[in-house]
Length: 268
Image (cartoon, rainbow, N blue to C red; front, top):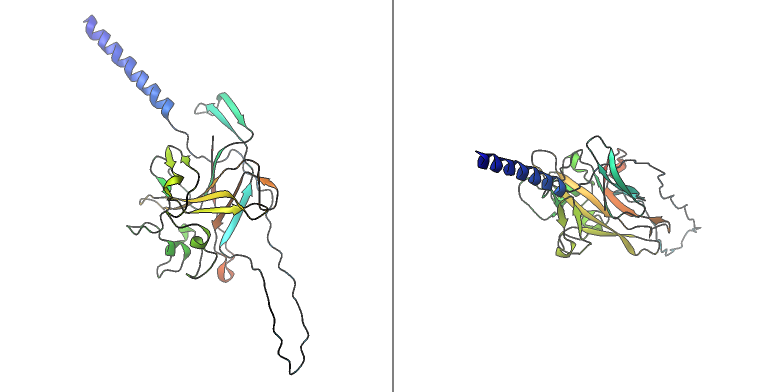
């Protein structure tokens, strides 16, 4: 009898120990920001016209160069501060650590829900053609059956120079920094994620952005834009930012409707 009770006691202790290990090993995952502030939004000012006189009988050769605002992308830039914290379910901290120069990622997506558990968010391989997996042409909007609006399509023509595959490298073509999405390793040395390098003040590609994909056939699946943090890096306007990113937004043919993007952050 004593032996049986001892075995049961040991079994209970093992269960408690195993439960403790599971709790300790539970990985952090991307979550919504504690604070989220829009500071300003800016847009290119169109150049004024140019003029030249004409006279009957003349043929005048001109060389013209111009710029036009993209109708395919919205840009986001900014800085990130944060805290690593040991909280209970009510948000009460046992201890916390301030991060003046955090490492990690900022995520943006048009999806209202993302499951960040292991294996759910991976590199977007737009060449995959199985099931309901999102194709490049569906996303850009030039296939016979354009993507549903939930995909945040760009409204591009196939030969447009400022769409997704002209901005991001093809899947498998470029390396990027390794990082984790929760428990999931995104291995940049395997050249899987589409990747862009956004400019600093000299148009060098300082800021890395990769395209991830949340696949869940039971709900809407789609692209998760991911900017890898660079603490106090020289940015496109010679200010210092922690991240730069672009997200697809359709402004073609006078489309003035807006797209809502949902932000997450994962700090280390």
